Image 1 (cartoon, rainbow, N blue to C red):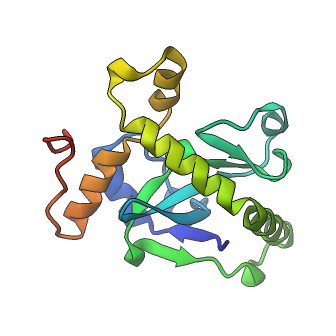
Image 2 (spheres, one colour):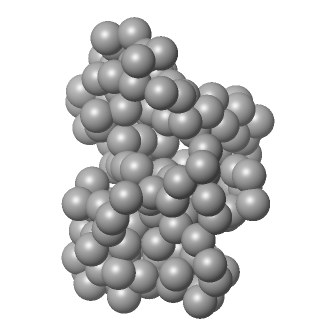
Length: 175
């Protein structure tokens, strides 16, 4: 599994449609993440650097620990659909900061072993986000409150690519 950056102009574009999209900080502290497919879209799921709280957390449908949290987490709640033109492959071996380079190598290595479960969990979260609010349990609503609006962001991506947004359950996502 490779690691990627997302171009700042695309992040800025998405933030207009969903304020839950995290800042890229103009590539000074960029999103680093992984790419996988859900439905007809490439999704980017950002990683978070290791923090002490990650070791204590449980894996959840919206957050997956990397090596028990020792190497950070995959924030599935913040995953976003991305066009290929906004994806930048990280050349880890050319990262100047030795410690950061080492962390990225370790994260990539671990993520390769956990790729199937991450993708399965992301699809499960995506499916949950498509349910009607009346069908959700209280804890599921709390999870979705932490998530980006995937369908709204897919419609925004379609507009970005000059495509007509898809119709979902008889109506387009509200902007």
